[in-house]
Image (cartoon, rainbow, N blue to C red):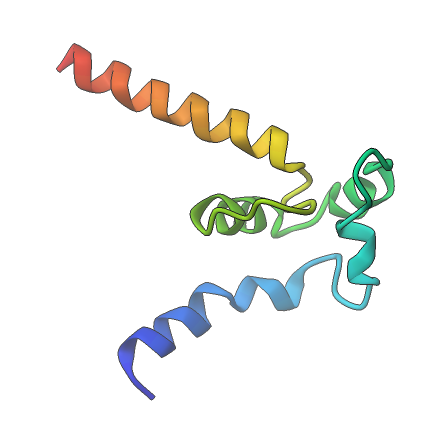
Length: 92
């Protein structure tokens, strides 16, 4: 096994501890305009919620509920981080 494959395997080990294991994946990919409440409820209190969110942001996931957030919510997080980083750079 090469180093990159090993790192990828370790990085995604969190998935085996997720509340959503065994839940129908379709719940996390609702039709446009459908409620995301049930999927977000599964995410609430999940011990790997932050890992899941970071995975989705890092991989540019455009669909579904990840880390308890919709794509629109994840976009806001990304935008906020970029603005914060730019603020830090501008202040330096």
